[in-house]
Image 1 (cartoon, rainbow, N blue to C red):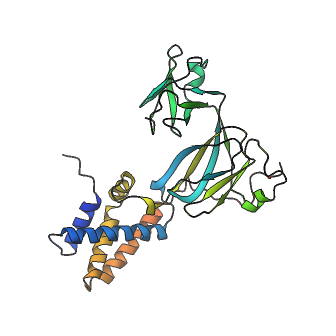
Image 2: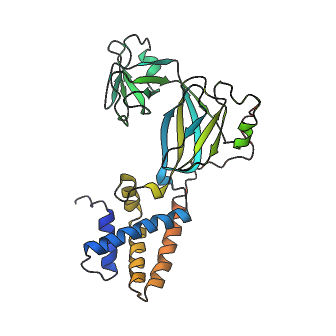
Image 3: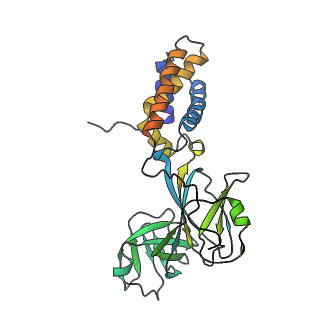
Length: 297
């Protein structure tokens, strides 16, 4: 038996319109229905902002003396930040989809590096992060478990991560503003979140004294996802009935059809059930009332 075709925005809209008695949807009707999919995204977000299907991890690089860093453009909330550090840093000789050739003078052993993660800190592939599963001490080629987000190349900076520093809960920005030595440099101990004209920024305190890696764990904003993207495809597959029901109900409403009221009642119940199913008990962070560290430490 063939594997079922994965649903798409177009197939969902087509099926929903047919259920609403639009037997042969036109291009104009399908375009209108795609607009309703955007509305359904907003409905889902209002019901449950953080969906376990959209839990994400991205990486950045801290700059010596710089405190402010922009949050990922897809950020919705529930942020966790960890600093990444390591003593083995250098410039790569080459890279490929699942390898990186470390510096010719790198003296790291396979026993030490295997199982650790490698962060690309500059150049081609910057912010890519993957786990080393094999290493040739002669050729300096490190093989990684997952393909890089962007392949490193000759000249890319790297760090073998062997220590991490979770920063705990965010603190009020005023606590950083009022710190006695607000411009001092050291390993950051705390961070604050502050909004800006786009998504927001984080402020590290103290300012970094070296180029640490920054690991951001957070929930993606459903509103930033393209209707034809991979992550939306996952939601379509898992919650085909929710999206189909929503488009159908909105088509009935558009037609001033008496069935709209009942179909919307079913739709909102399905949205609520989806929210309950998508509550991520394992990864959701319940921040404590007190900061993990004092800014006076």
